[in-house]
Length: 203
Image 1 (cartoon, rainbow, N blue to C red):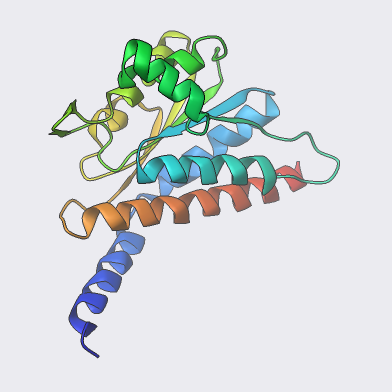
Image 2: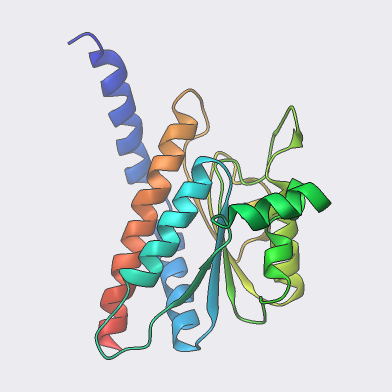
């Protein structure tokens, strides 16, 4: 087996994440989303790059997997999937506005904004600081007295500072950091969606 060393390293790091992640934060996220459902409020989900696809997947699961017969459904809206609207806001006002401007007509007190980001808005690349579109949207959420749930990694970034609950995947080194954070965010959102369905069924 030519790749045994790398394969073992990948799974060893994944096992370490499972052993060390803050499970209280996961519980808090489930309870906050359950309360949001009980109150009839709306959940909004956003992310960039690979995290944009995770955000779309999460919207699908929160809307569909959580359905319990005879119960009201969760109200969930994705902010990553309208290519026309995203490109319009990028063209007219810059990429930093794509989430906040979608939220502006809708988000209100006690709604929940979920952000998915490997670095949570820390670090920068050729285009400048990463994920400032997430930061702008979180600022609006706070101004409107909505709640924020973060899915992050590394040091959690601005997302960890701004969120009411932030689940930080405990790994902070490359080359495995980014793929493991992105992969584990999907593990977390599956756990949360199934847990919510069971809790809704009991309600």
